Length: 369
Ligand SMILES: *[C@@H]1O[C@H](CO)[C@@H](O)[C@H](O)[C@H]1NC(C)=O
Ligand SMILES: *[C@@H]1O[C@H](CO)[C@@H](O)[C@H](O)[C@H]1NC(C)=O
Ligand SMILES: *[C@@H]1O[C@H](CO)[C@@H](O)[C@H](O)[C@H]1NC(C)=O
Ligand SMILES: *[C@@H]1O[C@H](CO)[C@@H](O)[C@H](O)[C@H]1NC(C)=O
Ligand SMILES: *[C@@H]1O[C@H](CO)[C@@H](O)[C@H](O)[C@H]1NC(C)=O
Ligand SMILES: *[C@@H]1O[C@H](CO)[C@@H](O)[C@H](O)[C@H]1NC(C)=O
Ligand SMILES: *[C@@H]1O[C@H](CO)[C@@H](O)[C@H](O)[C@H]1NC(C)=O
Ligand SMILES: *[C@@H]1O[C@H](CO)[C@@H](O)[C@H](O)[C@H]1NC(C)=O
Image 1: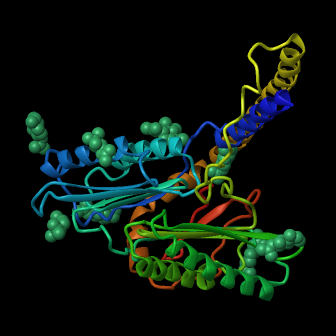
Image 2: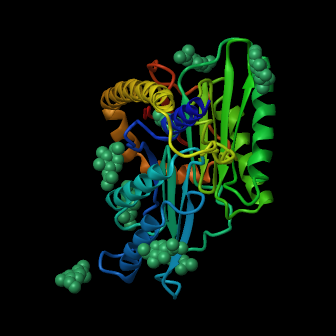
């Protein structure tokens, strides 16, 4: 009895461990950045040294709280910087740290003299500016990515389900009150297809601001991404994404409430265990440990396989990645764009599910993944 209890706990622990550890070595996916060269600083300026301090503080606080941290450096207007990062609500804290560190390094390569900057990764966003950005909703800086695959079945039903789901999603994220302002939601398109959606605001926004920001994101979808199998709209303060595959981690998505298990009752009576009892404990324990190790081994192998695929894809699309970088100034005009996207932009057929093109105001776009 006791033996089964103990090995049961071990097994549970093992499963929890398996599901809570990221076996994929955490490499982070850079998406794009925005830094208009209209406001710049010089290399030796106080702004630059303040920036170094900002990065230090942001990086060293990366694992704190909800994956969101904001900090302000400098006193006077010319050299004052407000900066923040926001990590996706479903990624693990070790990824926060890597993403923020990666972003602070990369941004200085991409935007070495610009004062106002946003850099987006799959897993996080980093932003700073010489103007006030805290608790303000930024909806002019926008990055729109669409999956190149189309939805072909039942377009009307899909539009309806998508609109309804995204609306509920926005409300949920906005009302995620003390939390991350993060929500995920899934819905059935057909018996075989499921819709997965994710939304997040920077938690410094009020519910009202967050909702308005997300609604603004959603309003882009009909014009930019009608019937694409997936799309994302990223603003400076919020983002929303949908796909036809399970792209987020449901296990981590809503902060898991720790299971409130009663402490195991050891000591079932008198001290000193008989040999049978020891064997009875040891055997199931060993068995569950072996199962655990096999599980770990298989998972690690799978993870390696997946990572390899991803790297290959990235190499295939190498040219496109550099294209997106050379297009950084177009994002500036995207900032001024309203829903003025040409719906019939397209690039070549993508690979499998996750090929994106970036829609730009002037109808330039690239595949990035
Ligand atoms: C979800 O977590 C699993 C394991 O923890 C990891 O392999 C996977 O990459 C994560 N997915 C995302 C989208 O973060
Ligand atoms: C950032 O991430 C990329 C890709 O995962 C990696 O090649 C690079 O070394 C990372 N840089 C830093 C500073 O972590
Ligand atoms: C800003 O970028 C544009 C486009 O690359 C370039 O033509 C212009 O000279 C740049 N301006 C400054 C002040 O660097
Ligand atoms: C931000 O920097 C730009 C360019 O240096 C400057 O024109 C603007 O006044 C600054 N804004 C604030 C609030 O300091
Ligand atoms: C930056 O500072 C270094 C050392 O303080 C100095 O040698 C260099 O000339 C300065 N560069 C500029 C562009 O002011
Ligand atoms: C953030 O990082 C700084 C610099 O490392 C550190 O001094 C500070 O205590 C951190 N803030 C919090 C709230 O932990
Ligand atoms: C997706 O739909 C657009 C517009 O209807 C069409 O031009 C494009 O060829 C389609 N793409 C794929 C991969 O089927
Ligand atoms: C989707 O369909 C499955 C079975 O077809 C059902 O169990 C599930 O509750 C449905 N989910 C929603 C959100 O309707």
